[in-house]
Image (cartoon, rainbow, N blue to C red; front, side, top):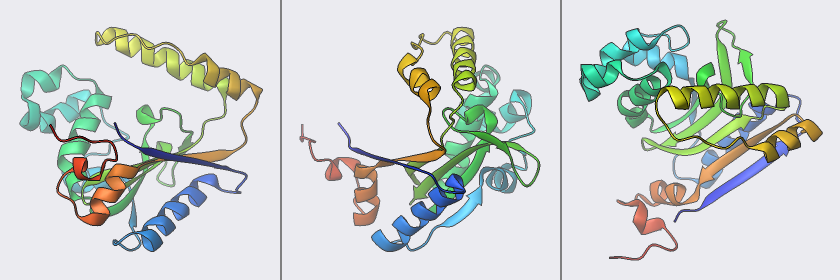
Length: 214
């Protein structure tokens, strides 16, 4: 069991900037950490691994990943899995009070894709990290139903390729997008994680409302 807090806000002139500002204000005013540093996914990858994550492939990523899971396993993973592996093990533990923005396009999920100032096609996502723990994940919401359906289809192809279980297409979401969603952003925050890092607790279980000691 865990608790999530989600909120959505439409109508800003620049929803993505508004979302990042709101996360910044949340941490600055309601936590022990102070205002977080906003940093791009690309700058973190380049600083740690010397790789531009927006202009790479599985073959290049497999080399540093082999130190974590072995060469054979690394060679069997796709670029998305390798990016997640390297980020979670090599970069995430260093993020003490940061908002990471502009994720690779292949990790867009339900977020819009735009061209960054550096010319990369990036997912308009923002993730908050405190004490090396992911606390919140925000999207500048994709409102194009056709594009979202194409993403679902592409994901299913990849799942078949890597022998993963089928996931039913979210027709309710696609119907809602077809009916019309305003330009907006949404954020999901892990309440238990938020409490844990702000209290300096040693275990997540100490901060969960319905946890029962075995």
